[in-house]
Length: 228
Image (cartoon, rainbow, N blue to C red; front, top):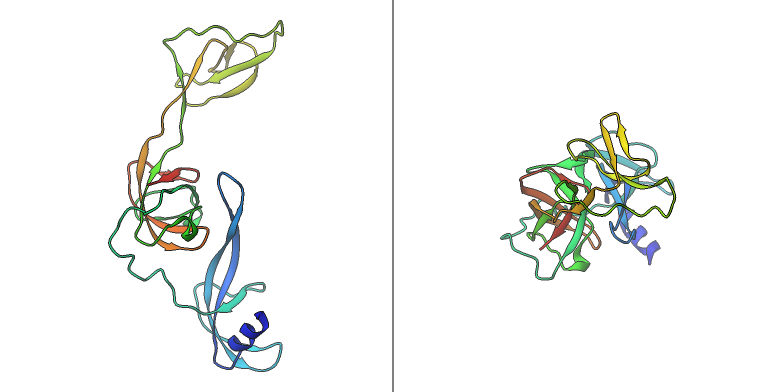
């Protein structure tokens, strides 16, 4: 079947898209390989000949390189109207896994990739809410019991800056380390997620979708959760 498709698409005058493979996309939670990103380099047509065949490049966005892939040309779905914006019919919970143009954070009218697609019921025009990740803060007004050390002078500690902007587990002792405080008595609290904006899906594939940020109160970053 694959050879038949190749023969049908390799006649003189057949149009091809030139695609450059990019990064692999993985499900944020499970690590499942969802696909490989591709940059549309340009278009070409077959001029004829046996293998190897001769092609003429008709248009390019960037230079054509060795290793670029040739696939049968198809009409882009990005320019199609997504219709009236609406909520997805099915419950959707996913994550932002890429920001187009390589930025880690995005804002109004920029494009992001999410790890949910047509198999999850998404369609062009669907609107999703973007939630920030839960943050950790220190409750300075509580005095929880010290962490038991079982006689070991070195135990897991809490490390934080004077402005409580950085937290992690630390193997050390109580004290002040260049403005960074280590304290076994600090109580760490997980703050709830907050809505930081909305995105509108405009192109879906089986496993991933492309969406435009319609509004954002804070920068939307890779790893942020998307929900109905």
